[in-house]
Amino acid sequence: MKKLYRFIFYITVTITFYLSIVPASDIPNIAALNFISDKLIHLLIFFFIAFVGLNCKYSFSDFYLLSLIFIFGLIIEIIHLYHPYRYFEFADLIANLIGILAALFFYKKKIH
Image: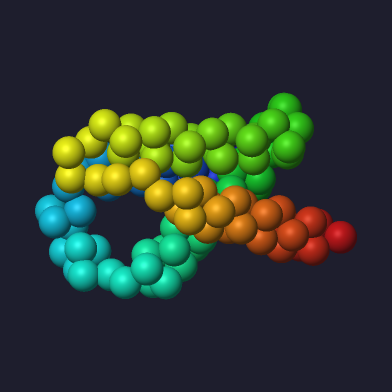
């Protein structure tokens, strides 16, 4: 089961990265999102990445894994500073962090 979780984790991170660097207008229905729905999507994506990542049972700590996932989101936002069709949003980082923390909460509930 660990291999399946790891496969899903890597595919999800790869797809997330790809969708984060293409122009939003190239992604159907994304360009029309309002502020709240955009942040909700960030929260859900990072919740999913973190929850699947936690279930991968890597040999390093959960804190380290979740820190790497947050840094992944930060790198994407930094790329957006230089991307001609995207822009940096601090609120995206907050939504990512909330999703990551929610995943940790539900993961800890699941194992206890």
